[in-house]
Amino acid sequence: MTTTPTEYKIQVLMTPHNRDNPTHPYFWCVLANNGRPQDSGEDGWYNTGCGWAKTPEEAWATASRAYTRFIGPCEEK
Image 1: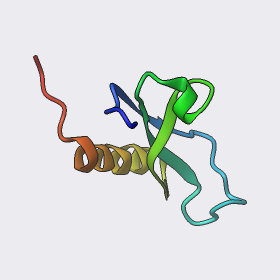
Image 2: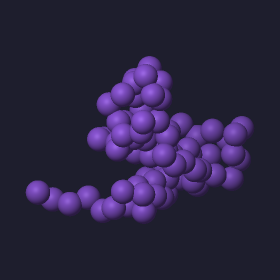
Image 3: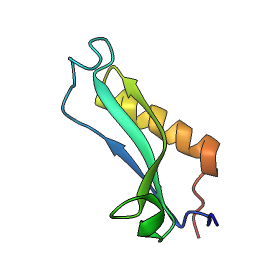
Image 4: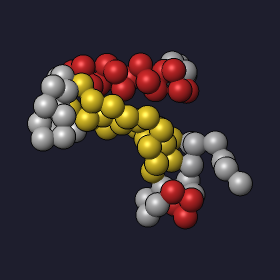
């Protein structure tokens, strides 16, 4: 049984990984947590999308757009 994720986070690696991707060395990912560590790993976080970018700023912007496509825009309460 799969449950809907309860938390999301964006992770951008600030250290360039030129050996992995010489032209786009900054890795980003959108992680989700459904509160059930046994489903996805030790801490419950699992990858919902990832990619590479030329700069950390571009990585953040791309990851933010991916999150918005995946879950929708953040809303103020």
